[in-house]
Image (cartoon, rainbow, N blue to C red; front, side, top):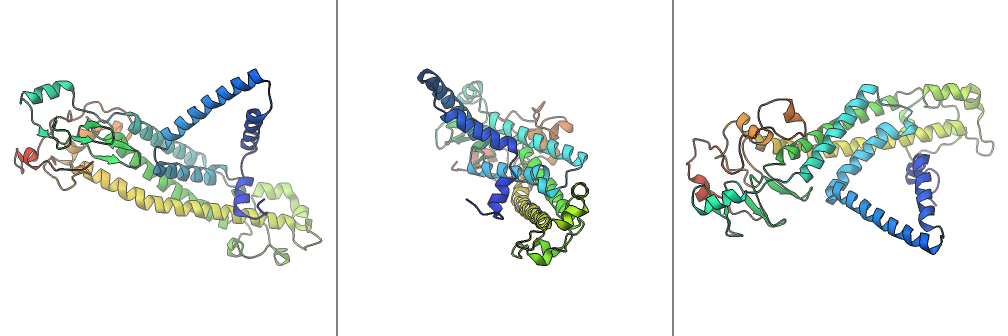
Length: 370
């Protein structure tokens, strides 16, 4: 059993009663003794539920990296929305913005996973055999592939306009899903910025509650009699409900500690620790995820791919480069995880930068190990 005041105990103590009751009820229903014919059916049902839960988990967390991303989202949600000790709630506008960012991020993530990146059609392969289209010979399979296509051995498929194989998502990023991948990075970065700003504002509000001070933030100082005269940092509504008599007279005779004040300081410290932890996590994630997003978007704007970032032979201008990924025309659909209307390329042939030799692709296709 964890002692009172332990951070893990405090975190578990903040779980909503509905979750605790639900877990206890599920545990009881899955272990309670029943007649054999009901027990057998219950076992079959639990096995089905376990398979469904496992499939859902790995669909959301294909790798350990994505598990960390969703844990970061949950940490921010808990600190900014659920945590009752803070006594502070998000403004309505901030809540709407936060939920919208989360929804767009999750839809972008889902579409990145569920959209096939695109492979050369059988008609193109027949034309390549006849020599009617541009191609190069893959060193792994010996098959003819269109420009900027590669064979991905992890899935055993040829992918058109391959950007890279994402180890975070365990998926190749190519012609059809690169837009959703870029949007996932962009909206995840925006969500980190949102969480960072809200955590800063939450810490500012906590510190400027009536009676709060830097002394109360220090976790190693005891909640002893010396703090008996300190005002309690708690929301105005809670102070009004408690009343001055309750606050001033709730002193433990054995220890000399004002229990109401001690509980207020403990809640304040817990809120401050959680908000500070979320702030640090958001800042670190923003540095890594934001840098990755800027790099991926800049390569897309320059007509390059992560597998061969130095190849500028397909850079035909920022707008046309992005239209090959986000579709035409330029508009609000670029910002949302919607299917592109008309891509500026079919993934089989690409416009070239006039400064480069027209045959440069076939002679210079890099040998990349994927």
